[in-house]
Length: 272
Image 1 (spheres, rainbow, N blue to C red):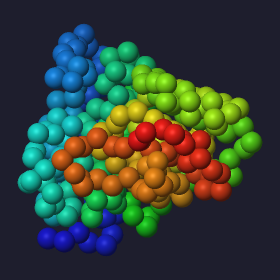
Image 2 (cartoon, helix red, strand yellow):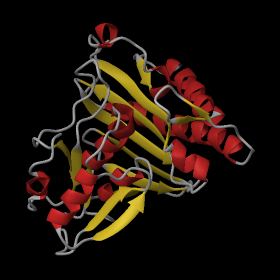
Image 3 (cartoon, rainbow, N blue to C red):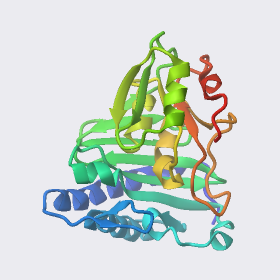
Image 4 (tube, rainbow, N blue to C red):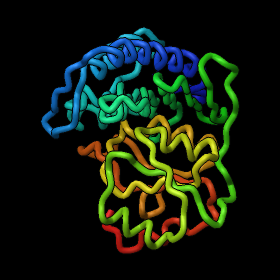
């Protein structure tokens, strides 16, 4: 069944599902959980799987039904998924390192992809009581607890000294070079996809990701940034695209609100 033009009809259910998964995560967050390592040496906890199972079961009850690609089910071959026109792309627990550190900066990410672009996105930070969500042509919103959601937008004119948000867990030489070329800025560390959300709500001006991420890390927040008036582009100036190749790794990318600033210029010489 083809995707209807307005994915907003699925948004309320996706938000509720993200919050339900967040409750499952918090039940484990307050316990003495065990941390295992995946084959790539990234951490895995019972909370990752509890959230995954909750979301997959919930999406299976929605109509229409679309395939689901999750960080915890990423072994689906490209030969199978390349035929998907629409599908759910989820990260049941984005920022497992932040979860393990118990700093609250982890999220549940649920995105609906259509024709390789995110048309619906939910980012829920259960420990912080924050939810960001958006759907194509409907705007972007931030909700604190169960209060009335507030519409958000990027800061369309960045100050001379921009606020740059970056990862707490991933720093490399290329990122340092980019920041040196950018010049004077205010750095704000943050974990998980909350970095993109800070740009979406105008708290930060720029998130340069000169390092590896996976498609489920960005898809939900990508939709939120776009609906808030911002951009999520690779170092060639093209929007991030999803499920276009065997690898599920993203290229390096930039997230920003002010489209008049030459953010790409500072990435000159960086091999994406």
